[in-house]
Amino acid sequence: MIVRTYEKLGVFIDRWVAGAIDLLIIESPAGLGKSTLVSQKLKGVPHLAVNSHITPLECHKRLYEYKDELVWFDDVSLLLSNRIQVSILKQVAETQPVKTICYYTTSELLEDVPMKFRTSSRVLISCNSIEASNQHIEAIKDRGFFIRFLPRRQEVISKLREIAESYSYLESEEKAEVLQLILASAHHCKNLTLRTLVKGFQLYQYYKLTGIDWKTDLLAEMGIDDKLITLNELLTKHGNDIERLKEWQWSRQTYYSYKKLLLQEV
Image 1 (cartoon, one colour):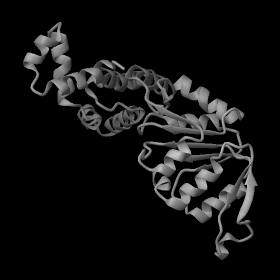
Image 2 (image 1 turned 90 degrees about the vertical axis):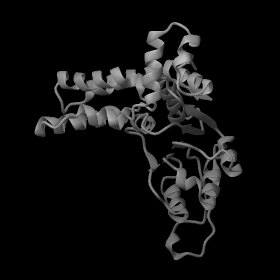
Image 3 (image 1 turned 180 degrees about the horizontal axis):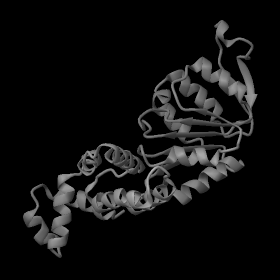
Image 4 (image 1 turned 180 degrees about the vertical axis):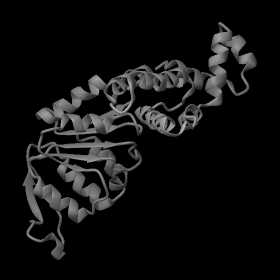
């Protein structure tokens, strides 16, 4: 399922927190704020958050410590590449109200945690990408709601404006200057993320201290794409694709691919 707005993504997270969804998986490119949104929804709610490297044994122990509470695995690409971790995830991600978690080991590090226990924890998995070819991971995805969060460019821009309003380390006119540069260049940026704005603010703060140019560095950080710049000029210059393609330096397929990206024709 593809979700295009932060509001709709928030609705699914609310459903998971409320108990209407046992397993929620969110896949989205980095820097679009999915983890921040989950953190906001979990504020004040008892939960286990796993957002760094963790061994299978430690994962088993933590799941026991937080049994019957919400469990959030964030940025779990490496975790999903471990066969034993995937096995643990498959157990805790079962959509039954109560599931059995097993981890049989002779290690003394297990301490007083049982090798087998029951839990009613509900699970949320968020990541930048999931290896679709892995049959075990596919089995996990099939257990719950799998969402690909792909907000349109205008949705990201709206979120940038929202973030700018709450940023407290620059004056309003200073924040507006950074935001304006980003918005003016947004159509030339292939991958616009929320982190772009924060980086811009940081560069501006350093500019205030040193006087060093911040605009050039921010545009470079945004990775402005020459093809997007050229296409935007052609869209302005000509009223139809026939004339535009005459001046287009790359293939027709590339032209239509970049036009779709630029105009967000999805």
